[in-house]
Image (cartoon, rainbow, N blue to C red):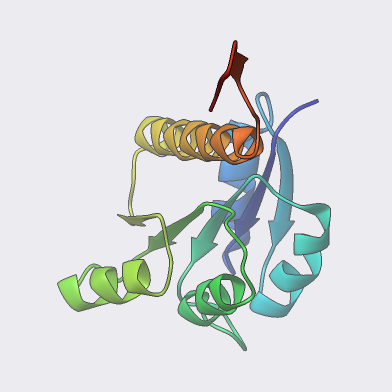
Length: 140
């Protein structure tokens, strides 16, 4: 089963370009505003590519709401906002990574893979918590 990406951006051209690029390796979900993105979360994406400047609810708010709700899905913010304060705010809101537009699709793919790999390792580590190893009288 393919891993699932949620691409959230209000610019159809950017969404289409990213969806086309990622669709050969991932199942791609798309959303064009914050409310639509929140609805797509029911499909449990493995990673979210999130624009900051969205109508109705901005990317910072979406990210903060997800983290407040306990979500650990990796979030990569993609935005034209390149000020240091915006980057820091995004990362402090809970983003795992932050890229400014324009960006290289190859670099974005590498970052997507790295974040998904890191999450898989975290999930594997959590799944092994509570497992007992026994060797004679030694129990770990």
